[in-house]
Length: 371
Image (cartoon, rainbow, N blue to C red; front, side, top):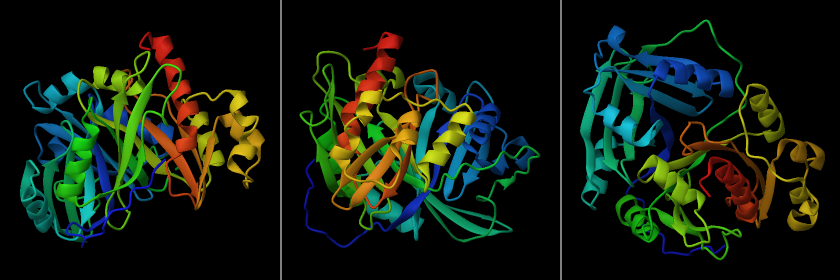
């Protein structure tokens, strides 16, 4: 693991965090039920024919600072269907909270970003939301959202969504980071794009000598905005004896895209127990991983028994340690999955766990016949 030191320049694109993540899905009503039931998200807002939107529906779910938007087209001619036919269900938009959506668009497009949405002002009785957007890797989009003058449930065009079915939340707090998978020899190009267009810095780098198993390898660089509120690790495949998880993703998503969303919690043991009781499936970690865990990572606050029981991984850096676990793919295509992470001071991304994680993924790949 190498930390990259670069000269810090004035932040021309101040970001205040992740505003929301929008998924294009084949059936938003059913997907919303899944995220409520399995992860404890709460009904927040809705748009569709009842709100004057004739061609699609969107359900907004929230849990603490996390917002998910699930969108489905309502006719065969809608352009979203092309996205679904090619990729299956997946992340389309990583929306970022900004102070000035118009300026964010100007700053990024003049630095070479491809426009997705020209700046717009949306207004209703609750106030005003301003948005603009640009493309990043693949067909993924960064939407800039300025909502400081808005008090409604989500944004104009949506109405409050009230439901009699409200499962309890599961202590998921905020989006910690979102990981993108890009094609062969594309990582450095995408890293440079984030540096030049978004003003991000490369804060950590991993090569195929650090991230490898007997069969496969990958390379990764972590990009962060100026204040550290938004982090995007970027992965690309590397040569190995067999197909890596990144290659499998690219084959099934049929493009570059978001591999996983990492969600923070303050008590990973209780959160994972809760999620498992709701039917969420996690990757399995072999018991051998825990035999010398303390000698590898040092003393931790948690008992090893529940960590081993649940398959939670532990890693340490100079700032502290973290605990993390990864779900199995959430769709039938082996593409998108979630990470649940608890940071106890650590600011890194679990490099010491990569080998154990990838071996777990390879066991699943082998079952699918894709290794």
